[in-house]
Length: 322
Ligand SMILES: NC(=O)c1ccc[n+]([C@@H]2O[C@H](COP(=O)([O-])OP(=O)(O)OC[C@H]3O[C@@H](n4cnc5c(N)ncnc54)[C@H](OP(=O)(O)O)[C@@H]3O)[C@@H](O)[C@H]2O)c1
Image (cartoon, rainbow, N blue to C red):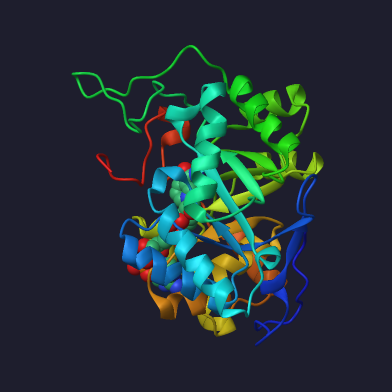
């Protein structure tokens, strides 16, 4: 998708925040602007999830690994019960974690997530990472040296086939992959009976992943960018001079510039905040002018991957022991 605003300033209001991207399977389309629930504190999770829905977000991302699906579910149900938003208006995703990759463990893990979220179905179920860990209840199995214990007895395709069966059973509308390389997406895409609807990977101007985006576009897969603001990690993308200069010019915040950029280049995205004022700010995006899109693509040279899980198999961002 190319930027559509020729003006030098950002439009004060437009429909960019309501952008939806068609899906090859499932619930029709995914709202591009999404809210992630990787929030360690349970009370903050509940407050933030409710604030996100009230601010206008209609795409939520959860995971059994975040250990807060219960609070996400409570927040969603609070909002549904208030009567202003209906279940079918919100696109809800969750993910199966590495200790549940064995096919016989997938359905119980999925049903436990549904129960904690208090839902009858999810719009999207993702394999959280392509790395299978020792099967069992321990999410972070380690040997006596502190090294992760992997499971060599199951392939990503085995786990994928178990997800396909969940789609057949109707409680999961679409399925996808997370933290994968282009090669892994190609392998699953070629072998799959039900193609991945979404590929969920770290992406922002320091890690644009244009090759993967191009592959996804050509094959009808939605590219979903997590850490769209760079996860507040250093080097801080929100302080990058290219971004702050554009933000001043278009009279928006650096966060709004980054989120608009992600939508305008055709991706769905996930951003997270436990701060209600920032949650509102992050929904108030509008279209960037063409020159700003070009400046971000051509002017930012830094390449930074903040979450090394794709390369190392060792999960980042989630503190150990949780
Ligand atoms: N599959 C995976 O491996 C994986 C990995 C990471 C994330 N994810 C998903 O993607 C979601 C988003 O990732 P992320 O948490 O890295 O998102 P992010 O939006 O890039 O970073 C979140 C950080 O930015 C800060 N922030 C948010 N809005 C801001 C604003 N307007 N101005 C300044 N700072 C702001 C937040 O601070 P406060 O909270 O203090 O406001 C928080 O520290 C996660 O919740 C999760 O659902 C998936």
